Image (cartoon, rainbow, N blue to C red; front, side, top):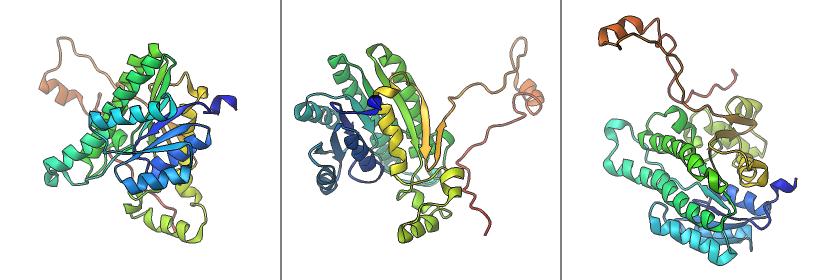
Length: 303
């Protein structure tokens, strides 16, 4: 499809030295885009640029500060003449339960994921508005940001904030023809390998070269990093010009549209609600079907 062809487009992918970010950068380049590759690890940047080829230019920088964001946009413009697509993928983990999480654990994750997404998107939006030809901003969120996850106060909060920023920026940038969407990927990475139900299956697939089993790809929506790239290329393309403000999940064989938060049940009391009235009405009223929380445990088929 011509609408999917990204020839002439220029993209930035943060955190693209390895893993999902590298897969995104490679897929965008294969679709015809020029790509600015970024990572905090200079060796990873060099290796990624070598793998992608002449369509790539590397910038070694830690994501979070305004200076890094500005440097990425400047590199795109200086090397390739413009900026059309931003994918904010950079992130780190500092997992701890609440009572063991330090200030630094919290601040470092929020700085890279949430502040880094903000600074990079702001710099990209400024450039795209100056160009006056629209653009695509693709923010990488997570199931943890949609559901919460044990031991991930910092990460889940940042990823939830990223989905909220996508909805806000979709409103603010609509007149400029700039779409903003959040992607909720699930793929075999160093993080998912830590899940006991997934680790042996991932290890076996890597050992044998066989694809993941159907229950993992369909029921859990988990596949390879390459399985996620189709959505990134689609959202970067002309085929997605009318899609904005959405949170879209992808992984394995699964593609999903996440619902936005909305009122599930409503009750009214003339004059307002006292604590006693809420206590009396809760169980058989708005609280009769409470929402779930947390990412559901994987359910491999019985042996």
